[in-house]
Image (cartoon, rainbow, N blue to C red; front, side, top):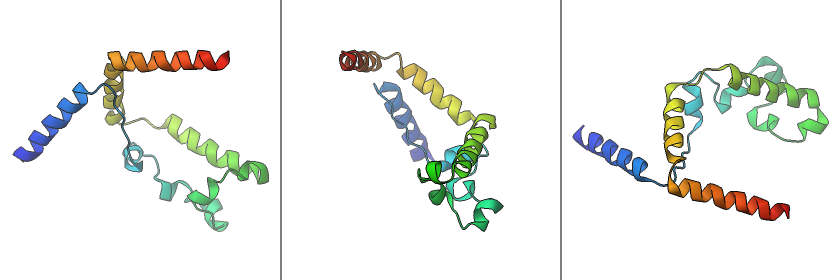
Length: 122
């Protein structure tokens, strides 16, 4: 347990000292809010009857071949995300993001991106 606590302390310190934070999560992060994981997103009768799984429905050709299926599937995903209350982990990440957005490095990155965008528009 003491090793775990020490590792958590080290990780917290590393995050607090970092100029930039890149965070990658898995599907379980959303699932903790009650959203379906990839294996279950398309696990409904209409898709099962057609033998379609998530990776099948994610193909862009559905937009031209069967727009009702495309918009129905992605519309449902969009609505699920809009109506689902995020768990506390999202708030924690938002606080970390907000703290990092005020660092000198973050400001320099934003300035660089803005200048590059201006140059592209010329």
